[in-house]
Length: 293
Image: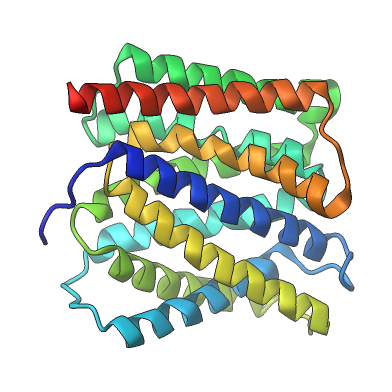
């Protein structure tokens, strides 16, 4: 496979776009898990819908594009998919019990986990600017979290565990992005994920309402688009550079709350979002300057 040319600026744009899609899926998962669109669905059923419809989108894309596929690295694919399925299921479970902003803030500690894991597992160098940017973004996330005794309820631990698990998934994605083309990675990931999710959902399945079917389809399509952007972004920059930018999901989540539910972010949310954005911009500015020097 021909190595993908490194382009941190493009990688950042792709990750920001993926973040917009992911925030939308979280809000839809909240609606499905709280009974807004009908009887509440189990998190494993929401996760199954995400993999089912994302798989259909990707298979259709493969049929149209007819890319040249290579021999897959099954160990990396199985590892990535296993961590991904557990992470997304835990995330969907958490948003059914705690506010979306809280769950998103906690779960998006995953870039910090990923950046730290990238040091021993990917042998990446993490200089002071990356540590600074990650610390700035983490500070913003903690401000949005509003640490109080209520934050440490069991459901919050689900989101925290999701963050650690998804952080590990990012490492597998980075390893795969240097070996196989993005569409092959997405195809195999969603095929394996659908297999795992289909077994799990058989224990909890209930017939969705028409509105719930629509939301499940939307989650799958949006997640397929997010994955495409994310895998391509990971292929164009170091994982320790790319991962903290995904904090942008927090900003999009707040925006969707306002656009859909007319929830106006308070001053704490505005400060936290601004700090997170600052952390991402520090990374983009520094990496672009180094590459063009």
